Length: 422
Length: 122
Image 1 (cartoon, rainbow over the protein chains, first blue to last red):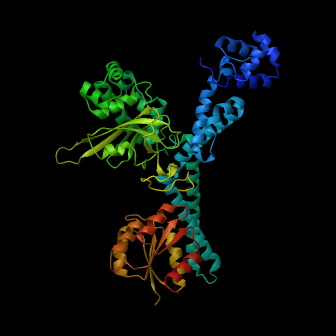
Image 2 (cartoon, each protein chain N blue to C red):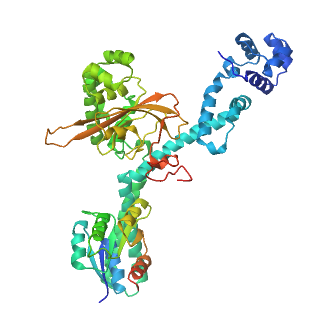
């Protein structure tokens, strides 16, 4: 196991934190005090066997003092620093910082992780507030009732010579609107209180309900599950069940032409090349892309859209947040493919706000004519999201404009809530 | 007879309250409750001012406003849009479509009266 350049510093910090004398630890580890002193000041390399003995003398395991445990922590801190470039974090001193102050480093990494979680929650809430027709309707109902109550009450209280017929009429209106306001407020509160139980209350969009169901099944079905309909009846709403039935039927058709064992063997041989795999199995490219994202344990993300660009399916990939509704980043290769049917698009992209994390994107669009020659052309595009190494030339994209911090983006539709300059 | 205000609002109680306060202030008020008949009403009634709700059945307030601005006979007609507080996007869209003024629900009677007077130069 390689030792970090500051293993000695870490040993010294741990020893001092434990209140142990250098000579005592050296004796317990079977080395001289002067040798331990040189190790602690990073002037002598330390072998694995000696490190094990020193760690044991300190009552620690080797990982705790070798720095291996810090690698992930340093990655998190680099990501945090990348998201706060203006702060000018001293990245050249990162290892020193983590070695000397592991607790504070963990606090920063933890807070950064928390910020990322909150941003995702903000994205979800922002999408809901902006696009959710149920919420918009509920708010309109409440505000309209309130408007009527306010106006009518003002007439009743401010008009001294109001005719008795008009008085009776406005009293009746006031009663009606107060009832309507109470009902609207209750519906709104029920909606906002729904939280994780939205699908049970039928408030979640059917597509969300389907995706939540697929997520709980790890986005995959066995052949046996497909044969019996995969338990679609468990979904709460009829619309979600209908979407799920169509999804399961498609998955079953994909599984029939791309049987799991030959498919995995071909995938191992050819890699995730949808065109090569489609040619090998004599099927269509989008079917292969769906199968690539649906084999057990697949970490590939998949997004589908129709000709309007509306996202019709969203399987997320790590470090690639997807908007809950449409209005995704217009720079996604998905849309480049949508505009050029049957032409594959392969690009490395870098998602905003993910610490420079890159993904390899393969996108493809197919057309079909379900009503024949004289019927409309239907398009469906797919975007496979795969992990990729860092690439300085990667296309800089985002999730959706509203929460994308990229400044100067030529494709920006609307200002971001995450940047002061936006 | 006072100047003519056409109110296009599908909420009957809001419409009744607005009609009442405008009538008492000396305005002649007509009311339509359906977006689908509103355009024909604007052409036939020839109002001096239109108060137009954003969310209407049949045809949205935004579509009606766009059509009003596209018609040379009504392109300069003053139109006050009724929107809901917090629905900034609705307001932005109405602004682009050429709304003269906005009133956010829930509004007060004095606010709407003051706006109508200001729009008609009273």
